[in-house]
Length: 279
Ligand code: HPA
Image 1: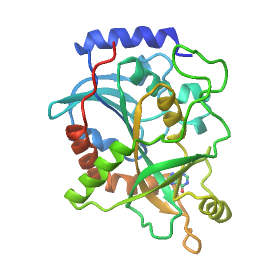
Image 2: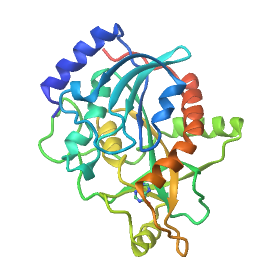
Image 3: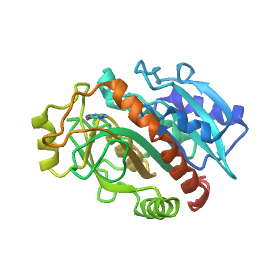
C-alpha cells in the first residue's frame, strides 16, 4: 500500500537531514502556513521532489516538507496538504501520513479550517477535535490490505488521543486560550454547504465541517499513530447566520488564529511524552 518510491525517499531523507528520529509531524491546513514561523527550520524539501506528492494548487498551501525544531524536540511540518476535492484518490491524499510513518513519527498533530455549525461558535474560535464523522463517501484503506502495515478493519473507537487532548486543554487554560471541543464532519467539497446541508450536519452530531483531515486520521490510526487536531472556525453554518463564504475569507480567518494554534502545538510538543524509537 505504501509505494516503494516513497520508502526510498524516506531512507534518503533521513540520511540528508542527518536525523534518525522525528518526534512529531504537523500538517498545516488552509491559512495556517505561518505556524511554521514559530519553529526553527533546519531542512526543507518541496513537494515536487517527493514521490507521490502533488504540489497543492490550492491557494494557502505552500507545498513543502520541513524538518523543524521546537525547544529540544525535532519533527516534521507538512506545509500544505493534499485534498480529495483536487481529484486525487484517497491513497494519494494520505501520502504525507505514510511518509511521516516511514520516518518513524508516532504523533500526528493536524490543523484545519472549518465551518462552525455549533451555535456557540464564533469566527476565529478554535475547536479541539474529539471525534469525526466521515461524510466523504470514501476511505483511504479501501482496496487491498497490507497485513504488515495494519489490520484489514481499523478500530476508530478512540481516534483522537485522549492523552494529547487533555494536555492541549490544560495548555489552553494556562495560556488563556479559549478552546471548544467537538466533532468534525469531513465532506468532499469543494462546494461549501447550503444552509440545509449545514443544518443536516448539525443534526447528525457535528460541531464543525471541513474538507480534509478525516482520511489523514484514518490512515494514521491504521498505522498506529497517536492523533490530535485543532480546527480553526473560519465561517459559520449556523441556522439563521449562514453568510456568503469564500476561500479568501477562510484563509484570512485562519491566518488570524494561527498564533494561537502555534502556541498550543509548540507547548504540546515540549510537554508530550517522548516515545521510544521504533526499531
Ligand atoms: N464548509 C466546508 N469546509 C470548510 C468550511 C465550510 O464552511 N470552512 C472551511 N472549510
